[in-house]
Image (cartoon, helix red, strand yellow):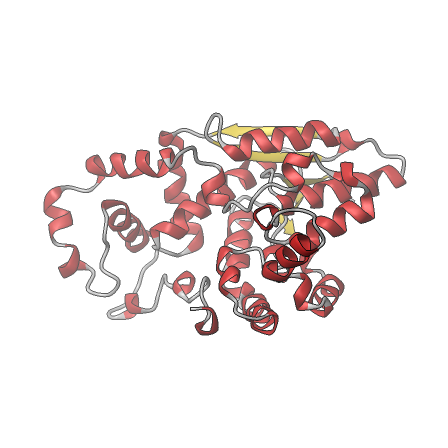
Length: 318
């Protein structure tokens, strides 16, 4: 009923959602230009370049927001307030979500995202530490059941603060059910690498995370469903893909010299005895949090820390 767009980082997940959306539009006789795609990043960053490649391949109407340190710092304030968090690492990943939602809201009311695929198809780096397929499946179950309090919080807050509705096709209940029924061996990269070597095919080093999803897309929609450079692009975290050789994080850290004085920083343990900031950027995020989210006495010990739950390493994979 309303114009729908798609976040497009140029990674496998968002690109596959956009590719399938274009095919669904084509079935209705709607041209691919009707789908608006959105990307944010530093000039020349991996996401900006890969998203352009996908948009040209699919024929979407593509929009970019080229990031600068000044804009990043101003948006970080909005990110802290909307997320109600103070974790600096999370804020750096929240930043592009807020900006891409802000960009999309100028053109559409609803945006598709690729969230959920990494959890369903073992896309994160720590899945490599799974000793067995059963352990890998257990970790998939664990991270999927925690999505509501971690990644989806980020996406929901970043979009809602910009009056944009986000939809997550990978987390359709039918998709979740199908993904969880997939033989864990097919998600286990060690098995995929061994099978490839035994068949005299691709070397183990060419086997990527989410190998099953990549191959399924190519089988179902054809090898040209996406540019090969994107279909087989290695996983890059959203907050990292918008950056270029860690330039953004360094610029933000440098800006903190003017935002946080030596005297303030010297009192960090006194001011914040719980989760004491270890950098000026962390201190600044904590400061912004305290200014925007009122916390009663002792409340800061738990407030602002929902993203500090263990999202990256289950005990079985430690």
